Image (cartoon, rainbow, N blue to C red; front, side):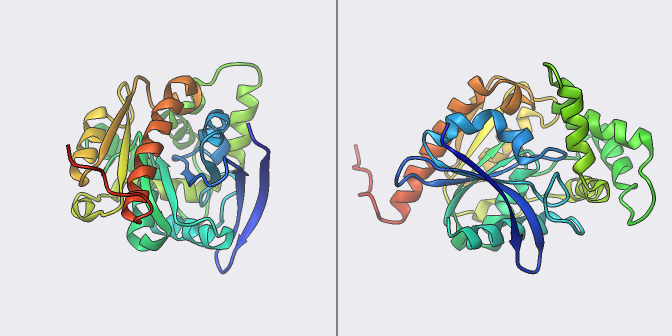
Length: 288
């Protein structure tokens, strides 16, 4: 793995966030990694850094309210604007925005609100909407009800949050409990629960069809949190979207990187190639 640089970066008028950067090969595109709900950049992507940085430049940030991300009221739009501010400060755009779970909506909103900063998108283990079944609606709505500016979050809500997060409870190896508690302890719990409410209300079905940037979906085929059918429908709703399948549950990114990274690299190569063609830096493909 190339040298990793971690620093806290001030986003003007927004706040400070923790950012990890890894240098890829000369001339490689930059992948902006956007993690999922209740995770952090390192929790979500840490097992993937080595494989990714052999092919692309990596920028990964703790998102708003998560870990050492920006503090303040949470919205998916605010997360997208935080990411845009970071791209502009680093001068790394246009990037390939890679969104995992909650990061998928952030990636698509980043393109929608700041298209000049996004060369393409890879959407992993995510969907155009999340709370559909009555059970999911009940669970996420219960969490969102606790997203108030004041007061402690009840213990049952925290247990539910960890259960829905999935990955943390599945970690193995020495020290995983301490690591999980350390990560959860750094979250802004009000913002985390506001994020649950944002996911409950999120729907992008009405505008996915106008996406012009190249997009690939990495579908986790054994996912119990974001059903594969929803992931497939996301891919089908986006024009010319490519689809890559990974045999794994929602935590495959961190628990089985040997399965996940090859699919993600294939998706990045596909999106990167199409983005280059769009910019006219490569000749158009020759018709058969």
